Structure formats: structure tokens, C-alpha cells
Amino acid sequence: MSLLYPTLLMCVYGFFSSLRPSEPFLTAYLMGPDKNLTETQVVNEIYPVWTYSYLGLLFPIFLATDYLRYKPVLVLQATSLVLTYVMLLEVQGLIAMQLLEFFFGLATASEVAYYSYIYSIVETEHYQRVTGYCRSITLFGSAAGSLTGQLMLSVGKVQQRHLVIVTLTSAAAAFVAPWFLPMPMRSLFFHKGCGVAEETLNSSRSIMKRTQDSESEEPLNSQDTSMLAMASEVGNHRTGLVEVFRMLFDDFLQCYRQRTLLAWSLWWALATCGYLQVINYAQPLWEKVRPSQEYEIYNGYVEMLSTLLGAVAALLVSYLPICWAVWGELALCVLSLLMAVCIFVMDTLKNIWLCYGSYIVFRATYMLLITVATYQVAASLNMQRYALVFGVNTFVALLLQSLLTVAVVDSAGLGLDVFTQFLIYGGYFTLVSGVFLLAGLCKLASSRRSKHDALPGSQTESESPPASDPGSCI
Image (cartoon, rainbow, N blue to C red):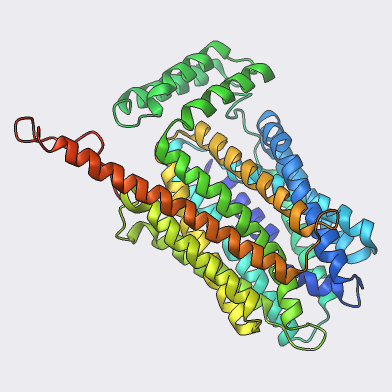
């Protein structure tokens, strides 16, 4: 029951907070008769606020989540979502919509609490199972919301305002769940030892034993002994802010010294930046190709299919016969190029069906690769360092996205039209593909050179593989 109760509440919260029938039609709603905003206002003045808010709030929310032990930040996220959709339903004007985007940025930045809360109240052996439950239910909720919105418009012939009402109702239902969650007694950084002393001591001994058992297997985890010693010094009182910063900085240096982790993290940050830009401004592009005031649009079906196909692609990762340790960079090159082609098709051919199809392939490809990147990064990290790397990668992605937004989207910058923006996004992914093509070729050349240098001595030495051989494959 100690596992079932919070997991069930988190699944309820994840489902209803992701059930947003209005989301696939947000641009059409803002530019329609309900809000009567222009394309320039929506694309160049309103949407960029979300990017800046997300970036500015990410690190403070990350620290607040750990310090406040997750639950208060979950309540804050639920409140922000309710406030967002109340404003979307009731208020008018450019300034009000920009403020709305700020609250939505706050809700998005607070997602870290959703994905980390469960780890603070269940044992390590249950991490994989509860993570699967929480991530699957949010994807299902998102797909169900998109389908609901499309059916309400296409079959029920309702106004778009009614989609916002349903979304607000769903957010209100989600708002109830966090209040009944149990308050965690520990967190990753600030509250390692708060709780009963005996429980803390047993937990530390258990972690030390697992660390010693895995010391010869995981290169990065071999450094965890010093981290555990630091935790034992803290004891049953809260870790100070300076101590947390020092711990984070030391872990940061340890993590990013590994070449494989650095390569996957680089793709993670670069690709997430471009991915967020594409999904944020896909609706304005579709609106230009097929105006919602003149034709029936099918954005809900597209979002549903792309979400489900992306989830299937993520599930199939473990069955792909690819040795990512050897071919990872070249695979990133090829699939990043495919994402660039999808963007160019959306931008240049200006056919709504090709736009829809390319968007689905684009999102599915990203979800497949980000799943691989997540596995590759997490494989050699403990949970604390994974949280750090995840936060750093996301922060770098948002920083790059903000720079890109300022340069090409924001009216304070170039303020380019949406077709020119997508031309730049396509070029961006082409550049990402080129970076990993060079990295892959250099890696293969280095591997061949190492094998060639080792060949003369291979007949007289032991038959063990050279130290430069790639790691295990999945």
C-alpha cells in the first residue's frame, strides 16, 4: 500500500494535468474571434514569453523542489495550470496573454517535481516500474486530450472556447490530487538525513553496500563513496545551500569528464532546443498553410498520432539491433538529418497533409533518440547525478532556445515570419547532423587506429580485448 497509494495519486495527477483538449488548437483559438490577436502578436510577442519564463524559473524551481521536498512544488504546478486556463478562458489582450505564458512557464518548470517526487518515497528497486507508470500515463493523457479536442470540434461541432472549459475542468481535477500525497521525509540534496536516525543509518549502509558491489562495474559510481561520506557527515540535519552548490559542482565535473556521456548530453541539449522550437511554432505554420477560419483542421489527430507513435518508438528502443556504443554518433547524424528533412518538407512544400505527416515523423524520431540518450546518460549514473545531468542538459537546451527565440522569433530581434523560421530550424538540424557526422567519423578512425596499433603485440599478449574497445550494446 505504501507504494500503491502515492503511485496511484501521481498517475491520476499526471493523466488529468496532461488532458488538454485545447492545446492542439491554441494558435487557432488565440487568432480566432475569441481573442482576436494577430499572427505577429501570437508568434513574435506571446509565445516567446514561455521560453524565457521556463529558462529563468528552471534552476530556482529545481532547488526549491528539493528544499521543499517536492509536494509543495506539485501543488504550485497544479495551481499554475488552473490559473493558466482560467486566464485563457476569461481575460483578453496582449499583456494578459503574456502573463498567461509566464504562468504556463512556471507550470512547465515545475514538472521536475512530478518526475522526482516518486523517487523520494519508494525504494530503488521500484524506480523503473513507477517511472514507467508515471511517464506512460502522461503520454496517454496527452493523446486522449488531443483526440477529445478533435472529436469535440469535428463531430460535436462545438466552439473552441468549450475546449478550454474542458481543459480547465481537467486541470481542476488534477489540482486535488497533490494535496493528498504523503510528504517525503528525504530529498536528494537538502534533506538526505532528515527523519529517524536509525532509518537514515540503515539506508546509508545499504547504499554503501550497493556502491561497493558495483565499484568495479560503473566508472562514475566508483566516485560515490566520497559523496556518501559527505552525506554521513550531514547526519540528521539539513544540508546547507553552500554545501549543496559545492556537491553539485563536484558532481558536474565528475559527470562531464566521460566522453560518451558528454556526446549524448550535447545531442540532448542541441536537439531539445530545436525540438521545442518546432513543436511551439508548428501550429502557426499549419495556420498559414490551412487557415482554421476557412477550413476544418485536424491538429488533434496529428498530436495524438505523434504522441502514440513516439511512445511506441521509445518502447522499441531496447529491441533495435544497434550497438550504440559504436554507432551512436553516426545514428545521431542520420536521424538528425531525417528530422531536418521533415522540417524542410513542412516549410517548403506547404501542403497540410505533408506538414502533418512530417511532424509525426519528426516527433517520433526525437522521442526515440531522447529515450536512447536518457538510457545512455543514466546507465553509468546514480539517481542524484542523473537529476543533475538532466537539469544541466535541459538548462543548456533552454538557454540555446532562448537565444534562438531572441534572434529569429521575438519582435525585439528579427521577428521573422514562420516560414523563414522553419527554414532556419531545418538548417539548424542539418548543422547538428554535420557535427555528429564528424564526431562519428573521428571515433571510427580512432578505433581503427587503436586496433591497428595493438595488432603487432596481440599475438604475444593475452587475448583480452584492447582497452579502447567499445562498451556493451543494447
